[in-house]
Amino acid sequence: MSKSHYDSRAALLSGVIDYAGTFPPAKLPLNEALREAAAFRSKAKHPWLMGRMALPVQDILGLSGGQLLAMGADGSPWIFTALGKGLGAKEVATELERLRVQNDKTDGQSCRILVRSYETAALSALFSDQASEGVEKLSKELLEVFEPSIQPYFEIAFGENWIEGLEVLAKVLVEAKTKKHLRPGIKVRTGGKYVPTTEQLGRCLLLCAQNGLRFKATQGLHHAVSKDKEFGFVNLFAALNFAHVLGPENFGKAVVQRCLEDNDVKSFKFGEDKFGWREFEISNAEIESARERHMGCFGSCSLDEPDLFLKQELGS
Image (cartoon, rainbow, N blue to C red; front, top):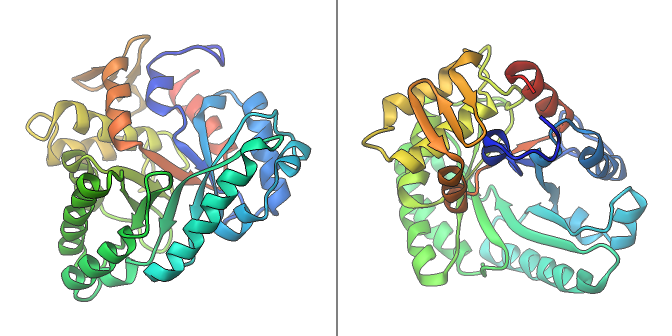
């Protein structure tokens, strides 16, 4: 398959990587990470895998179009997701305003910088104690400071009361979709100190699908197909898109979990016009429609590993 060829592989996975090369374990210096991102488009087997670059707010605010060009950018706009430090509505509002100024300031620069999403871990600690009350209060406060130009992702944690907190958060986010015309999302960690169970991750996927919420994962998604208790990114986006297209009655909890756990590379079939997993199939058009709703992506400190494993584990 040529780099420019469009088939179900590209339909399912184009733009799914939020490149986070400055974060552990890679921990590259900023300019080195920028060079990696710029070079990926020309050297990779699957250059369309990368969507955005994930950086802390302060790093984004220090960027210029000239710096991006010096690191190898070709002049196309660079799209970012900002990782915020703010834990309260006032702090988040300050960071968002500075990011909006950055968006406007670089409109006429040599290489435009576009921040399209903002991720916050402000809610994470609340999933272990009094989840329903704390999550509802803080999430509503935070949502008040967002505008559609920069969309929010709220990171959750799998603490003692994670189910209750997740359901409360989903309800608040759905209300914000209607009242503020936002397209908020939920962010989960699929690796690190705690790896969620298949049931936990599957429940998050289904909840996002049923409520039309954006979804992001981060950590641990190095392989294309699940392996050695590590989730594969193809498994993840297969389950997410099937859940959106087929609905819970045809692709419910048990099937989602089976899809996430499947370590048989032969189960996944990429065709010109449709993608298949075992007995299920969806068309490229259905995938594109689903992706408009969930905007699924995953954070990775490496671009080369997903590119390599996609080739090694699933062919071209």
